[in-house]
View 1: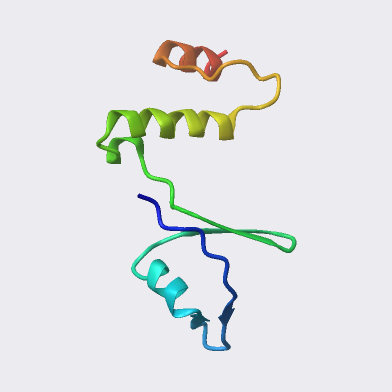
View 2: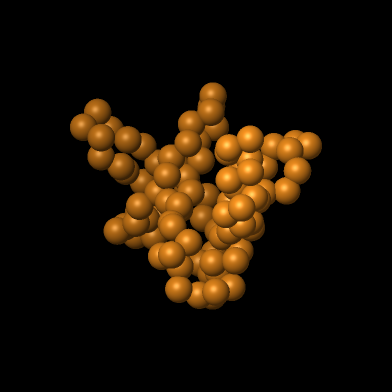
Length: 92
C-alpha cells in the first residue's frame, strides 16, 4: 500500500540542512532522489536504475516502456529493439 500524499513546506538552511515537518522528513530519510530544476519548478524523482538491477520482469518492462517514452522524439519512429536495428541507425 502506498503512503498517503503529503504536501508540506521544506527549508534548506545556510549549512545545507533540510528542515520540515517530522512526518515528511521521516518519509524521506535514507532515500536518494534525482532533483530537477526548471525555472520555479523543482521535481524530485527516484534515481534511474539499470534494467539489469530490476528483478521483477513486469517492473522491468514498465521501466523500459517509460524510458522509451522519455527518449522518443516526435515523429522519430519506433525505438530500435535489436542490435541490427541499432547498428543500422548508427552506421548508416
